Every structure is written in C-alpha cells, then in structure tokens.
Length: 108
Image 1 (cartoon, helix red, strand yellow):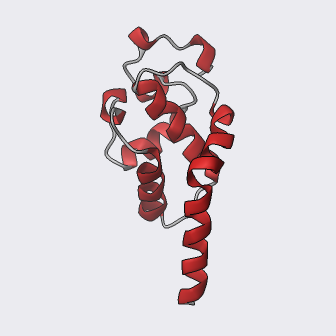
Image 2 (cartoon, helix red, strand yellow):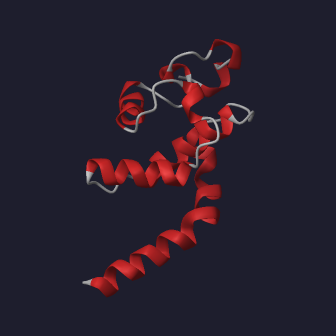
C-alpha cells in the first residue's frame, strides 16, 4: 500500500499498513501477528530476528526497514516509505549486525 495514502483510522488488516503487501502479511502471520494492533509495542529487530529464525533464512535488511516502518506507524508515527528507514536501520542496528557476523565467524 502506498504509505502516503494510509489513514490510521482505516487500518484494520495487515495489508492496510504502509509498505505491507500479501507476502509481508504472511510473514507477520508466521510470527503470530494477525492484526495491526498486534504490532503495537513490538521491537522491529526482534521481529526480524524471529522471522529469520522461523524461516531459517537471513532475510534482506530491507525487511527490517519495513518492520521499523510499521512498528513506528503503530506507535503513532507518520506513514512513510520503507526506504526512508534504511539510514536509521544502519545507524541503530548496523553495529549489532557487524558484531553478530564477527561472533558467527569465530564459531566456525
């Protein structure tokens, strides 16, 4: 859905959220999230890590951008395109991701 056209009062299904289409809605459902209200107070990084674990796949970091966009929206933020969260993701989570990669290499 086009983020600029999202009205909070009209959000009742996952696909009503900004940046969420059918595939992302299925990912949320895989995590036990059935409605937009289930995203209130959720940590986008924890959601991303749970999805990676559930699917046994490291998802593209832009998925984390989408998680940041919808959790921010549900916390009262403005609807914004997911790519506007990329720089923030890199600032907030880049160091964590680098640390995890280092730990994974040491375990091998």
